[in-house]
Image (cartoon, rainbow, N blue to C red; front, top):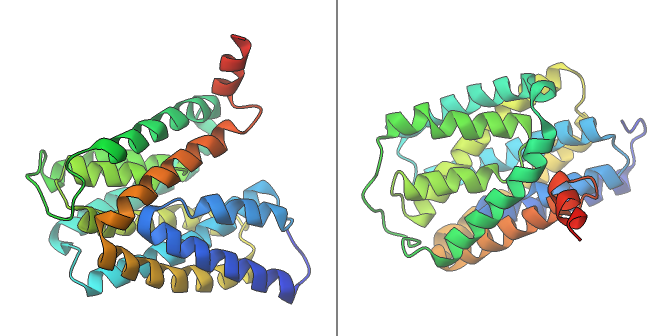
Length: 264
């Protein structure tokens, strides 16, 4: 944890969070930018993750507000999904030490590459809604808690997983799916943040400055998402999913990377 207040460092992290908030509001993956910045700033890994949840909560909440103002969230159904995601993320945060990290490290990059391929080639990636394959209640009892739990335990790619569910199972158009993804993200971020805050791992000065930047950036990103729709969201989703997969595989200790290199 950083003990002294450095105005230059805080200002720099505010700028980083603003950019990340903009990207995250459109396609998710803002943590790819903010988490390394927090670690480079000198925070230990646990404090970096906890502080990142604070700024991520601010960004996803900001994006949710922006999308809601435009009438893109159907609240009678969405609140159940958000509640399920939030409660499951709290459970996930409690179970961090019980979840095999090696399974996540190896499996998540494969899932992210699959998601990137889906968004790159799926014909249903457009702004209009399609027929739902399951009911919103079934979604709130299955997909939402599964992704929320994962977000509390690990996190990378949670937004992409929500997005796939909203598009493929609930038939939402790209912009409305992004809006509902931000709401679910906000709920799962806030759920896990509550536990991190209670444990005293959040660097509040840095976290609040980054939260302000993320809030501002998310307003910009959500406006761009609404204006440009699938033309912007689709390629950015593919890019972010691939970037997250590469980032996870870049870790020399990633079991999937070790296994592949062991073959050669």
